[in-house]
Length: 553
Image (cartoon, rainbow, N blue to C red; front, top):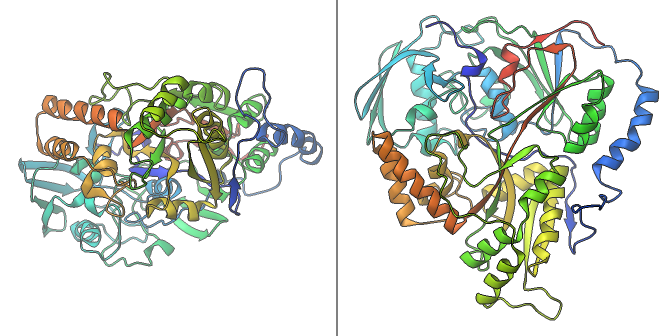
């Protein structure tokens, strides 16, 4: 087979919410509602700030600044946390790593597996996988990529050489044999239907043998681009990899510029000092930028899912009636229409609706404040003299979209007597708290990882409590664990679908998390960037085939 296109590369399990400001912020009692027919947003809403800055922009930025015409400036909200593909699980790390590294296999736009570094593979039995590597593949520093590098990459996660949340994804591997430089044989303890997924580009990145804990400082991969430099909280520079085995990208260099503030990001795009941003701008800014002749907006349905996570070790949130009451008290449709400008679809499952394992007959939670109040009354959680039943705290990053979402939830939950306190932190602090379980409620997005049903094990299996996985809320259900184990080992897809339908039914009833909506993939770019084809997961893979003109308009 020939070299694959960008559409055949993919991202892995990414759990993300971008950051903006750098100081902790706290929101207590509800203020003016950001939602509602006929109500305007508060004066500090990003739309007003954006509109106020437009005249100044037009006066001071009539022409684009001089810069290298061969370098694409790509705006991102936060620095990648770790560019070692064995470790980084935040959005920026995995999106950039997907351009720098390869997996053994990759998936096409229909989620089918296709060759990558492994040009073919065999499965003699349910517990043996044999990969035949593509000859001539080199790392960016010209070292040949061999079976020893593949074995080292997997073993370094499995044996603790690096501490990785991905390690549990390879727990089914018993041993790895490398009989020659181009053959890798995986002997399994048990069948694992998701091993190929976890060996695919984006979920896995093959690193050179011997790469240690400081590999993130100068990562070396075999992907279409190669790493040049990184300045934390400022930028990451990558360039076309002359040793890549895939077709050479048209774009010579990409500078990922960290711009935490969404308003500044919008202004940088409009005045021409940046070329592209994806899924990082508030809906108000997108609508305003779409009217500008020097910018283009690509908007398409996506699979990125926003969700609300609960800590089930909390004495209040451990009660199913409380979680269900919160679901009924929320008006997700109103949020989508008013805050997101319709750029999302409501979600009831983590899986995309077109997935073979997607279940339709799930418990639903339409907006019903009366039912939310009734559930809490029946649970004995009565209102006090001030009308409040209890307080909960929602942690967020300082991303404006998330803060406005939290403010909307604060207003809606207040109607059920729930006082929601909001505390916003710089992203690294927020994400650290979430991964170590220091929260009551939080909201993040799954990017790409929810395109395969092993996401249920990764996020809800008892064996995947953080840091072994993403079960940060410590949800545990023996029936669910049994169904997940069975689905991971059963070769019959019809039987696996039965298991996953039941899994989704249990989760929809128990609500360890609430699936909110699938966000559209929105790319805003300058006209000198052409051939932009967004992926469902909002990855950066379109950079592999897009074209950058030398001229500015």
